[in-house]
Image (cartoon, rainbow, N blue to C red; front, side, top):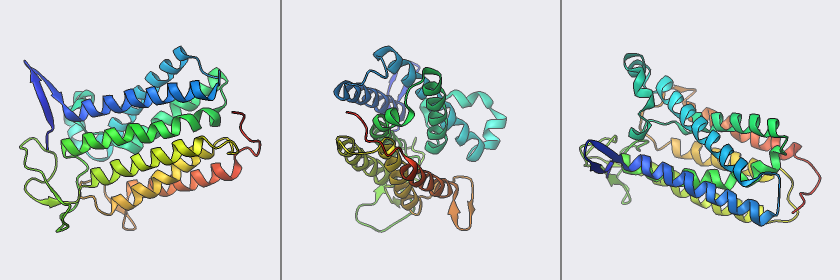
Length: 259
C-alpha cells in the first residue's frame, strides 16, 4: 500500500506513524468528552492529559520492547538504537497494552482515583485508537495475512512494504481494524447503560478484543516468536485476557455506578 506518505527534505513521514498519532488524538478527545458527559470530577483536564501522555509513552515503549524481544531480538542486539525508530513500525499491541495498563494502575493508585470507573471510560477509547493503529499497519504492510484466493484478498506491491510483495493475502490488518471499530461502538453504547456495574465495560473490552485477536491470529502469516501447542504467543495472551475479563466481570462491584 503506502508505507511512506511523503518526504520533507531528508525527513520521511510514515503513514503508520501518522495513523498511530491520529488514533491517540481521537482516543483522548473521546475520553475528554466522555468525562464531561458523565459529570464526573474524578479527573481534571490537566490530569487527563498527563495520564494520556504517560499511557502513550508506556504503550509505545512496551509495544516496541515486545517487538524487539520477540520478533527482532538479533536485530535489537546488533542495533539497539533502532529501538527508538517507532515511526517505521515494529510495535506489538499486547506489549503496549500491558505496559499501558500497568502505568494506568500506578497513576490511579497515586491519585486515589477509582480504577474501574475510569477504566470503563478508557475502554472504548482503546478500541478506537487501535482501529487507527491497525489502519496504519495496513498501509505499512506489517501484521500481514496468509496467502489466500478469497475475492477480498489484497496484494502489496509497494517496494517499501513490510508484507510479502506480489501475493494475494488475507487483509488481517483490516479484520482487526474493523473488529476494533465494532467493539468501540458496542462499548460506547454499553457505557450509556445506567445499571451497569463498575468495571464491566473494561471487562467486556478485555475478552471482546481477546476473542477478536484469537480468531484473526489464525489468518496472520508474519513471524511472532514461535508457537506453543499450535497457538501463537498472541493467542495465549488472548486466553489470559479473556479469563481476566471474566474474573473482573464476576468480581466487579455489585453497587450500581452513579452517573
